[in-house]
Amino acid sequence: MGKGRNIINTKIVFFGTPDYVVPILEALHKNFRFKDGSQIIAAVITQAPKPAGRKGELAYSAVDKWAYQKRIPVFYDMNKFLESGIESDLAILASFSLIIPQRVIDSFKKGILNIHPSLLPKFRGASPVQAAIALGKKETGVSIIKLDSLLDHGPIVCQFKEEIDENDTTETLRRRLFERSSQVLVELLPAYLEGKINLKEQDHKKATFCYEIKKDYAFIDPAILQATFKGQAFKGSNFRIQFMKNKEIKASPRNINNFIRAMNPWPCAWTEVKLQENGETKRLKIISSHLSDKNLVLDEVQLEGKNPVTWEQFKVGYPQNSLVS
Image (tube, rainbow, N blue to C red; front, side, top):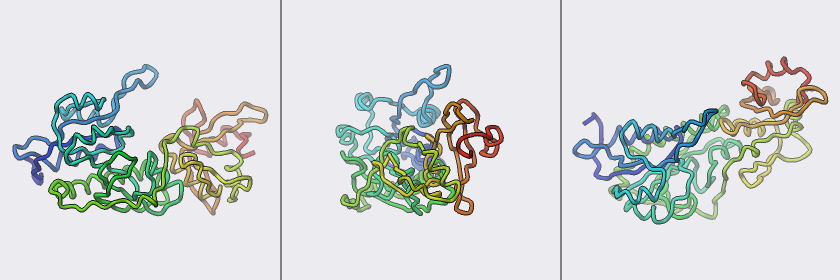
């Protein structure tokens, strides 16, 4: 058995899909074993592969690939898992994105631990990292809760805080949060299994919510961008964060920069631009930006059907574009 591994007597099932949660699987695999040296992860439940690319080849999730390499059973259907007869007292869930039926929750004697990247009860829902960045928060964190039948509602097992850097995007912050979560989970899991952790009820009256993000939600009006390029807030209207039920914020350079950071890596903020006077309107993806003397400055953009380029390269290629004319 590997050096430093802890002995536990509980098989674990993992629910999750994207690549940024794989560190949690790695931490469980490296740090825990049964007494006989066998691995503790009994199965993973992840999203089924989907056709991708021009050839429509099946794309398997990062969790799926990891489990396949470790010869761990993979399930795409929760009912199939229940029918499999695999026994497990505990499940761990991270970015699974599907509602877990009560009968599945009840099948685990020690429950399901949900790793949620916010300081609950703030930002319950599908987009907590994006919400924290878009609102210009200076810190966020992770809550490990015991799952119940309501959305991100269960009692808190553990919480930790994490500072948000002014250059953080959803990509960088989310990876850091789940990397730290993997370390925290290793420390708390033995105590949780032994019943030594007192769970704390959330203050449900303070709950806030964020929802699934759609591509259209990442749109920024060209008039807003033109104002922020000059260091001004757009005076026509506030900016609405649609994945937070149209929460309104001032359309200032700083807030728009925060929103662009929040939309990276997906779906990426975007706007509409005419490449020349009386020309057709095309979609322009805004990949990254920064503030300079209170002005919003675009760094990298991508015109529909083209490769990403710097903003300066774009202006040279399309000097008559409507955003700078």
